[in-house]
Amino acid sequence: MIPTVVLSFLSVLQLVVLLGVVRRLRLLGVARPAPPAEDEDWPLPLPGLEIGKFTAVTVDGETVSKVDLDGSVLVAFFAEKCPLCHDFVPRFAALAETFPGGRGQVLAVLVGADTSEMDRLRDVARVTIEPFGGPVARAFGVTAFPAFCLLEGPVVRQADFKIERLGLSEAVEVRS
Image (tube, rainbow, N blue to C red):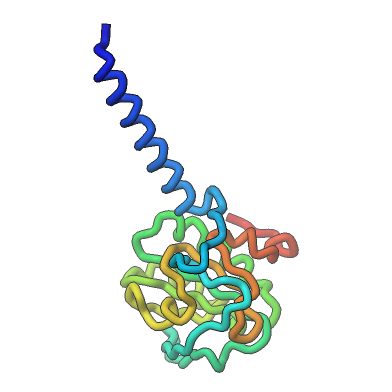
């Protein structure tokens, strides 16, 4: 027989592990997180938010800033050490290829030093590379990756961890 103390300890340990798994799934975007309370930090910009000022230089030497965001703009944030980000790059590139206004209306922000996805994205988007906590991520308030935003000018229309939830992929055959 197993002593009651050992069974109690194992039950508590199992509960802690289960809560950790649920938290990780939420961070990966598998489960949609609850809306933030007023005083909570939120890893994505909220709809209706006007993004902050920023200036960045693309890998092609173009300068991009808040004033360059006019009309509908699709923005993606991918992080260097994020396996899920690498999975979303082909879907984002396929959507960006058909986004109204073309490359000039699409911005891809690569956070960290990894440039492995740069070539795949630079034909369909303006691509910037910045460190963690860089100017573009700060201006948008993005602290979790991957993150996708749909803007109308400098105002966030939608933001989510899954590109499919922006409601744009229905019009595009998104290939993985």
